Length: 368
Image 1 (tube, one colour):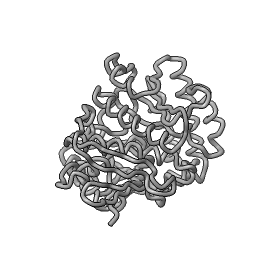
Image 2 (image 1 turned 60 degrees about the vertical axis):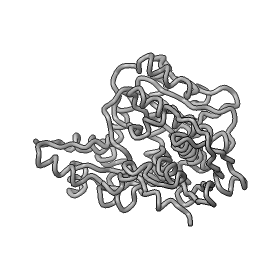
Image 3 (image 1 turned 90 degrees about the vertical axis):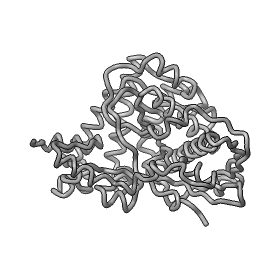
């Protein structure tokens, strides 16, 4: 089977693994970054309940898959959670808002994992102010299992094209308690398709913001297993293209290259397939507000997963660097009440299933 350059680059943009025939299927198996995906299989496999809960929490969604969390065990029942500043995204997230939202996802997943074992979490946020730890946690008896927790292993960010149909009324009802708003009106959906694509294109064509992503791109199994964070490009066809010099950082970085244009075209076509959007908004924009937004986003994604709905954050229009300021204003004018902050905006719909993202092993995220 032959594949055109256009088809190959499309596979790169979508993160799709393609194989034809048994030999190719065997090659696919050898290119799976098993070590980087092991944390998904090992989650919960610890005797210490704090380590068990942490092993689930590290599977939380987070910006650019940077996995900024660090944990310190204190005594027999306490955990102190930190955010590692070296993993910040200074160009696209200059005020660390998105990173803090990601920490909220982590903390909510920790809470759910502890509750599943009958433990209650007593949490103090930012006990020493913004510059100190994110949370001090004490585990107590009395937690009640959260029904959303059973969907953690199936929750993955899905960037593929979505089907041309709205989520079912049952799916929308399941997501509604966790969402600030679910947008299905055709006129508003069309407006958001344009706005979110414009924001993506600004990020891709602003050199410093695009290079932040390029520098965090891991091309193929070897790079992913060496650094299982950032943006992974993996699969049999992708690795063949890397070896052939058809996927390169230089090509992805250059807006004039066909590689860049094909990737942009794929992203746009995927976004144009979006049938509905969801938001998480807060009345303020303090660090605790951002943590709460992350907690709700994680719950929203799990609720979507429970109904077979794919979800992808579209954060570019919410970013706070100068080139996005006009779209930031527009998205808040469109989606927020005066004084509100749109913390998260995402697309939802039906799509082909995808696999998990790489993760650092829990032991690498421990302090002490």
